[in-house]
Length: 171
Image 1 (spheres, rainbow, N blue to C red):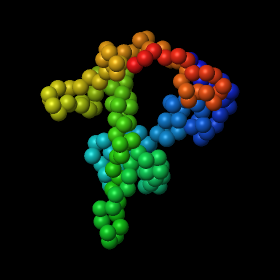
Image 2: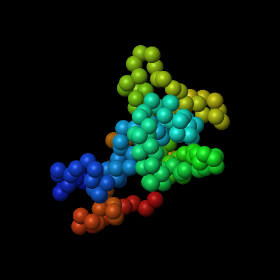
Image 3: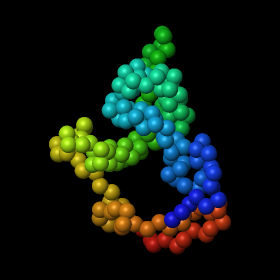
Image 4: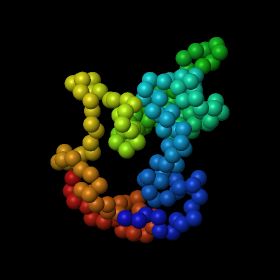
């Protein structure tokens, strides 16, 4: 399904205006340092200095990325020291919802880019102490799904293009 009709020549900084959830998400987290900042937050980093040390990113770039994540409600600033005033950056519920995205990117990189040495990091399920192998599953029948098992239909958010939403099966 092509959702970009009428959006040819759209500048990168305007992709969030497209009626496409992927484009809107990239508007928020698509800058190359942003997902690495989020990765570090999932890894336990909370303070500016931790992010900067772990990533080696320029301070001004990190400050801009963190400010954007705060503005979009993905992290929140929490004061941890009064004098001088210092803040930590904590993932919000909206931020925690990015975990499957981070894990999917990691899994793809492990499969296609890790090389003969294997993955640089392995995720262990705390409850059973086994490596996790994340998989996408249908929320209704719980069966594993892949790209060939799904079809896209027009949703109500595409009404802005004058297309009626397709009828869907009951959940």
